[in-house]
Length: 293
Length: 132
Image (cartoon, rainbow over the protein chains, first blue to last red):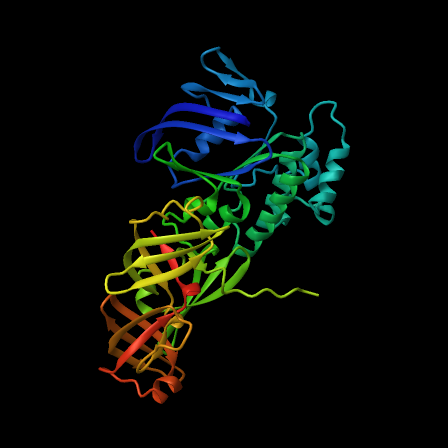
């Protein structure tokens, strides 16, 4: 049973001309879903309409059987009436406030303040709580932004490429924080992402958006391996290095936070370069298992 | 990576495992995979399919290759060869297409492999993947 039903139409002025956004998405409660697509495909507009920050031309948003938006019934809840947490790419913290003050500022009138302490502890912000944003690294700022988005205990967390400005190591750490809060607070999370590895690691479901329409959806691994291959030992990742060793090539692929090395033949990799997304596949018959003591 | 095109000839399924025979023309190759016609839509008799296996999984033999457990065998002639200090690569022209193999340079020397040598390329059933 889908708990969030989204059906939205909106004409947008995109860089490439007029874009007609027309999407239909069903999201189950507790899922972490990704919207994946090129820039200008309409990803951010979907999140903004869901948050009530942008008006749809027509459509409906149904959350737990309740209308947040229904153009037919002329219902459109205000942003503050929707239980949503939003994290943007550019932190958006108040520079004149400390970390703790930033979190406190997000409290609703009369809300129990203990959530701020809880989030500071859970997000490991204790040592940073009295610092101002300018004294924080990009990763730390985004951790604060994530904590702040959770102060009002939202049901739905919207993440608009929150990790794209961070380096690979920091990104992987933040991904773990997002997964942690997603599970602890039983959130339904929508994440916009460009990174195949990130999508595979984090998402239960992916929607691929092309020119304002959902072109594919499903489990990330199924959607990305467009050509089905029978290898059961299968991962997707990004090429980080290609080295020639004698007559073979050794290709290093980043899968999640792990590097693997694959022996390849020249023809096999002739159309591949560093940065390309690849599927690494082997048969279930090859790997061995060893128990870690 | 070796990639040969063929058509699915037979499928034998038990539990989650299937044994699939692919008609490649001159010979059939057999593979065992953890898929069934229920889990993989491409598993249909007559379907065009690609047989995929790595160069490192191709065993090379000279002379008659009868008394071994390898089911997939095809004869051919070495048409290209590259020798490194440790590893060597040979390309074999067979009736079902070109097959590349990586082997140690020691093995290549013991077998006295050179361009023009008649060899038999062999691949274990558990090393072959199928792809649409």
